[in-house]
Length: 161
Picture 1: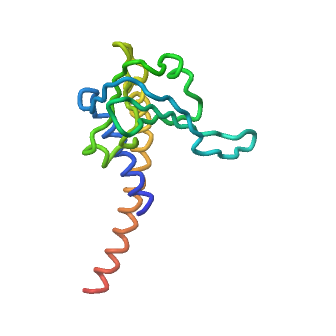
Picture 2: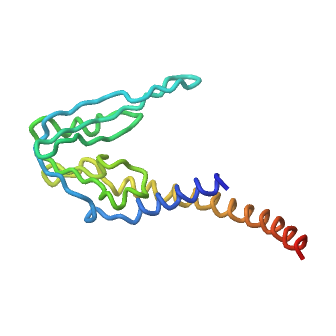
Picture 3: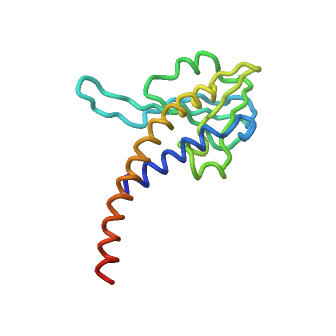
């Protein structure tokens, strides 16, 4: 039952992430004050260490910083922006944060001078594939759970008669 609920929640979260459009995001426009990178986790793998990093951007119009997390690096983002640039950061509304796999201050979409630096459409493309892959085990687990509980309930009902 727990594995079914986890798979169901992840599937619903991926559907929520897939259904949201850029026009639904909250816009935060401002000048970049700081660009910082922090290592949040180091995981030992058999042949290498996997390092999870978090990019932190602070803009002049917001008190909190905005984040983007990766294990590969931020060269594609940091090479296109610098301190003093005017950017628009798009984040998810809090009502959609109930479902979805990103945190409140995660950078979902980033635009500098009408040029997209972080594209939400790329994330949506991967969510579509993951959604299909997760829907299959969710359905299989639901069927297995139904078959097992049907037998259990039929035994309980026959004993009470």
